[in-house]
Image 1 (cartoon, one colour):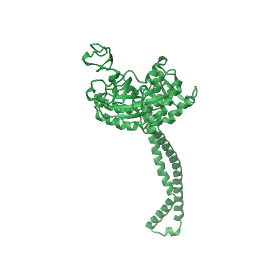
Image 2: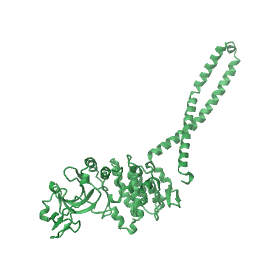
Image 3: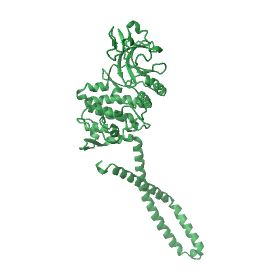
Image 4: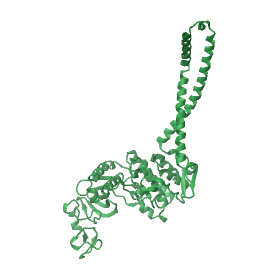
Length: 462
């Protein structure tokens, strides 16, 4: 049998041109199982002759990995199912195309990230065995998962929508993998259905931890753009190019669940960039209010308003996964539906799990104001008592013969001594008075801040 050295497709014997890409016969080479052992990806004169994203079955890389079939294709890499001759087992090999391999900065980032990724060992995460960044071909040696991506899983469902109960089950498993990765200080940064694999047994495996970020950086440099990646799944702070935390994965998790339930991401038509920053996600029809509210928190524009820990998400999903109606619904106090845009602004007890730092600051300020009010009351009483006692003492000494005989200057000194003596007795009241001023100032700051937010958001209607 022959194969085309340009596209890698099989070509019938005697053909003058490749039926797939039209390559002339001179560029078509014979290929057989006998010759497969001699066709190596690390042979210099072959590199560039065969497209790395179209390797034919039987192709051998580095005398070790024999290509069995192509599993998928991305912008900068192709994934193949290969047979590892060293350990005699099937693996997945992500082979990067030449454009990425020539970006030295991206390759170095990939090598550094690869060391971290190889330490992730969890049943919900695809295992990475090696990151090969030397030689003419760069690739990642990964665990082979027999199954399909979550994107293909969704396509197999009626109306391309996954049932709510199944989404909760899948979401819990994905969250377990994220929780482990976050505990190792690893953020995915590119959660989407194509990066989630579902096995035949219904188990979930997350892939491409940290790898997509390296590829995005390379794409930005090569294409000379300020940002790149899958915009529909990116959090607002990620689109801005800011440093991100675990909240970016929580946003991506929310988009993921939204797409499984609605059949599409929350923002997928029109000016997606504008919608990510300015428009709330539409309410998902035929989905419980509790889950709509849960997802709306994940999709908050400000990262500090989202869940700040995947453990909180797992707890909610575990509750919801037991039965319907879910216990989460008992926490929902109010949904305000915007009939014009068919959106939901969630208000309920689930919001108590928002960003921890914000909650701590709020509690400290409330306690500070309460103590200040108490201090103000005690301080006010002290000032009154101080004034009354000072006047009583002055009235008493005015009739004292010893005071009457004093000169004018000595009388002033005596009054000052009495005043200081009484002030020392009530000194702590002065401290309470000053503290109360600080508390009152803090209260004014809180009132001004929330009044400003209320006005900016359009008043009580928001």
